[in-house]
Image 1 (cartoon, rainbow, N blue to C red):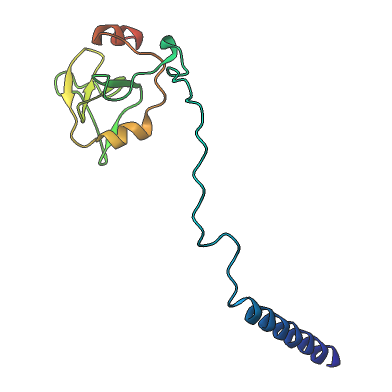
Image 2 (cartoon, rainbow, N blue to C red):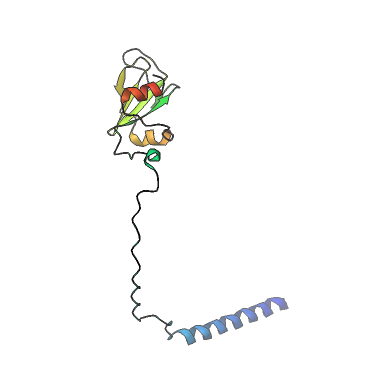
Length: 146
């Protein structure tokens, strides 16, 4: 019981000392506050250097490509139903194409259909990093084995 009383006495003493120090510092202003900052010295201009990556390692930005595509081997289930090609009833081995804010599905037979239940955000979440860029649509199809 006595240790509780001693602890309270120490706490109140520490609080009193803090209050005294706070009162002393109340009207003081830190040095340099309110004085104008000195003008920076003129520095020699830095040479402008082109981008640090060589051209063969640069990846085009999203506005420089017409679209992106990724393979989707397993069946595609959207809203609880399996997506099938409208022409040949294929239900797996899709290519999912993202272009101009639209998503298109392409089956192995080459039929394409627009998919409105998928948006660009869905595509971006599921697609991995691009492993290649191609100049034509046909080159990309060959690269993906279609």
